[in-house]
Image (tube, rainbow, N blue to C red):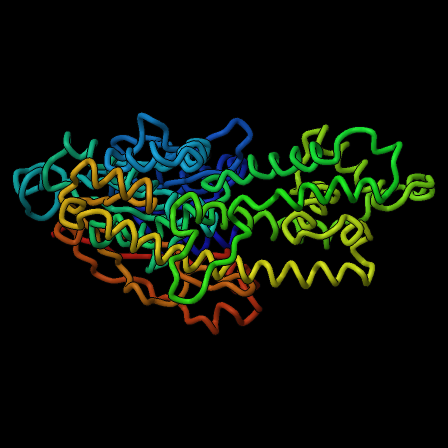
Length: 496
């Protein structure tokens, strides 16, 4: 921790914005150290009673006055959603409920010059007034598939800044900084730096078909558990393996809900190219991937006494499926329920998945599962392309761009996207193709940003970002050379 403090102080900042700060470390280390050096200090915890992580901001009192700090929740509820996103959240309950539960927060800081300096327009020291700046510090939601969530959070943050800016001098510049968990290709960065993201942006559909809450995967896993239990029924202790397999075969015979249908010949219309069809394929893919992983990695949960109880392996598995389903477990945590899901999707008898994971027989279902996952992924990719094409052909691009309600609802429901715009795009102080800011094993990218109002602020200079080979000298970050898993972004700014 002292090395992190030394790194911050080495840049002699007037404003320092930190993310992923532990509250205890802020109270016992950061705040006392920075106050002693002439900084005002504020901290904002992530939402949730048990959260000990949050955001910290430090402002050098000799340069700037912290007029006010507002804490903003980016858990987007009915009253906090960007107005343009309402059709999307109305159409997709999983996404709506998922973003509502997130602990993401932001700090909005209204800063003012400690003393007038220079000349300027409205609110500037040309009239003897001290100039203001509105600064946002945030750490957006981290889950890699949730590109659409980070886009919604960015839009909500910008709306909060707009609302406050209405009551500030017109010349007040805005700055957005922090760990945005988004690289230059993500829609969140497009909205920040270009001021617009189209309803057809691929991040919308990618998020809707990959983020677990959007797919309502927990609910789907619960349904799968109850379906498996209902198929097997009661009385498993009075029958043998053959009777259990016969009951299980009934589930296999009736399990095709449209997901198992072949995709059709090349050039044929894709049967999955409705939003619900694509969601079914995506759910099957995610549930099978999780189930196969659980089944392969989890130990056999039978005790020696159970294994020696005289019942066959299939009957014991059926008993465990019924017991775990009754206890409210799912394939995420239960090896028997994971086995049931693998058997259902691959249309296998329970005997094929009833052996321990380290048994050589397990390789037969494992290989088939990987083949099935590949097939589902190809179908999902094809469905995404055709889904966007279908939504575009059924709606008017001009009407959509104009924001006509019917076309907006059509796209929101069928392609999981809405058009978001912002009248004051910001400029990244670093080029969009700069070296990475975050490096961990097998992953290196730029997800940290400082974006500023280039009309009101001049970027005088930035601290150079180290090349990737330096960051990976000790495999990844943090390391002996780099005390954090993110590098510091530093910019010298001047009022225009």
